[in-house]
Amino acid sequence: MLVGDLQRVIEYPRLGFAIGQDVPEDVRAAYESLIRDGFTGRLIAP
Image 1: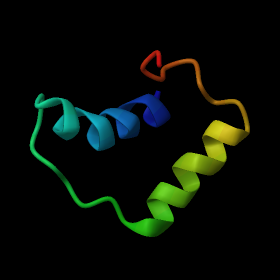
Image 2: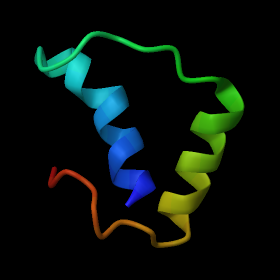
Image 3: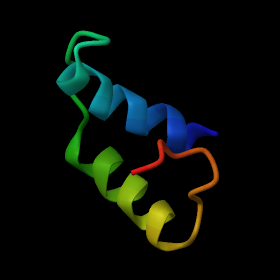
């Protein structure tokens, strides 16, 4: 669930649904690692 939440923190400002927030590089790296490991069930569909 947290992977999907973080994706929304990253993507929603680009879509106009939220204000931008700083995502530290280590958090972004962990997020990308979790996606590579298959934690994709809560991601926004492409």
